[in-house]
Length: 166
Image (cartoon, rainbow, N blue to C red):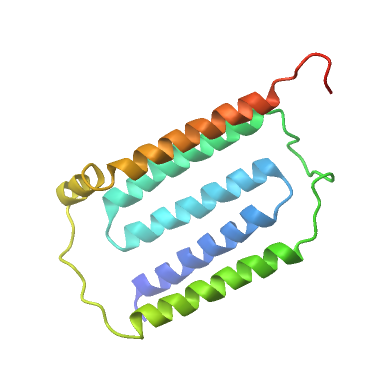
């Protein structure tokens, strides 16, 4: 086992652990900060895999923009920042659905590759990555930006108090 393998395992464990903390914590701001740790660990994984451009895009776009947008949306809605008792629900349905989804994806992955070796394409360059992003993948990125804008507008609309209503 090489040093890169150990680093990949450690960063993967940090990403999975902080991802689990994102969905299990009762504090909304802490969930946002755990999300920063998770996305930072994923950027570290990209660095270990020598995809430096993708690591910086991960840091700038996801850690720098999406998490900040999430935290601003939380502040705009005047949502309770601490633990919330009115949203307590049993955790077993979520655990059952998450476990079933994970098991289904594992079976799908094993069935798709059947433990065979996959030929790797030639290493990418920043030019090739840019051509792919702004060529074939431009529509999904634009749809994602519209979705995030809609979420922010929806958060603002929910937070506006109408006179005469509670």
